[in-house]
Structure formats: C-alpha cells, structure tokens
Picture 1: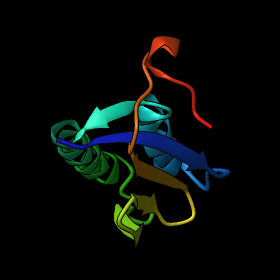
Picture 2: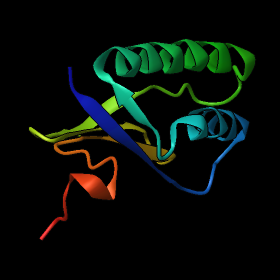
Picture 3: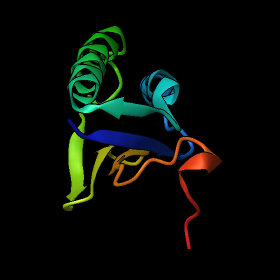
Length: 102
C-alpha cells in the first residue's frame, strides 16, 4: 500500500464558495495518507463540493479535477482556487537509527 504526502497551494478566494472549499481542504495540508485514506478524502471533498454548490447557488459551481498526473504525484484542483498535490512517499526514515541520507 502506498503512502502519499499532501501539499496544499491556495490562492486568494473569489467568493464564499471558494473560501469554504479552501478552508475545508486545508485540514489535509502537510498530511501523510495511505491509498484508502486518499480515496476517502477525495470522496469527502466531492461531497463537500456538492453541499457548497447547493448552499451558494448564486456562485458559479465549483468542481474538483485532476490537474496533472505523474508516476510519483497527482495534482487535484479547483480552478483558480487551490492545488492539492499527493506526492508518493518513496522512502520513510523514522529515526536517525535507520541511516543517513547521502
């Protein structure tokens, strides 16, 4: 099972809907998740987007999309709002006892 380091890059929000979804995804910034948790997170974000779009019907609907995909990372985005990148963790060093990176 793979692990992923999540990194958020946020921009100035355009409206209340953008502000709400950005604040919601902020909880995963700098987190490490496994494959299952990544799927659950994406489902939770999609559900939150549906709720936000319903609540802010006057704002243009927002949607989550894959912005870029490589072997080692996937970048999700809400257009002109944020990028949430899931970087594949290739190596973990849990203590200095395990070795030194050269």
